[in-house]
Image (cartoon, rainbow, N blue to C red; front, top):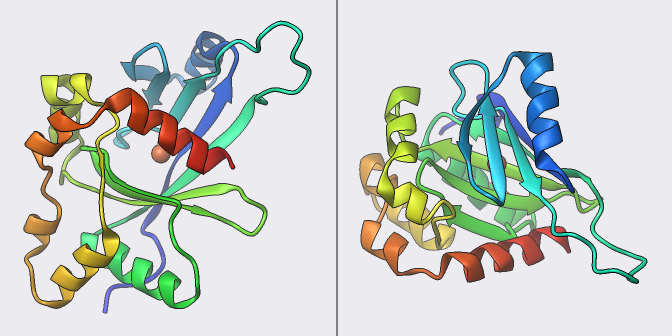
Length: 197
Ligand SMILES: [Fe+2]
C-alpha cells in the first residue's frame, strides 16, 4: 500500500493584477528563473522542481465595479511519488466524502485539486516524467504550447484500472489526440470557476 502522505511540497501559485512584478520580485528574492510564460500564467523555478511558483495574471476589473478578484493565493501543491500513491489517496479521500473539484492531466503532471474546509485550493499531483529534463522537454514542445492546460480525467476510472492491475506507465500516459481536441480557453475558464468558488 503506497503511503498516503505526499513525498514533497512542490509549489505555490499566486494571482496578481501585474504578474510581471511578482516574476521580478521572486526572481530577485529566490534567484528564480522563468521556465514557462504565456499572457495568463508564468512559472518559475530555482532548483530541480519543474516549478516552485506560478503567477496568474488577473483580468482588469471593469470600471465602476466595486468587488472584484483579489490578488493572493490560488493554490499550494504537494507531490506524490507514484500514480498509485495519488490514486489511493484519491480513493481514501473519496471514502471521507472529499472529491476533487478539478481532476486533470496537465501533461507535466496529473493533478487533483481539492478544497479544504476554508475553501483554500490544495493540489495533489504526480509527475508524469521521472526527470526534470524530460519534463522541461515536454513543456518546451508544441503539444504543451498549444495546450498548457491539458484535459479532464476520471480518477474513479483510473483507480479502477489501477486496482485491476493496469501498469503505472499506462495510467501516466498523456493522450495527445485528446489534448489537441479540447477547447483550451473554455477548459481554463471552467477550471478557474470551479477553483475560485
Ligand atoms: Fe499547481
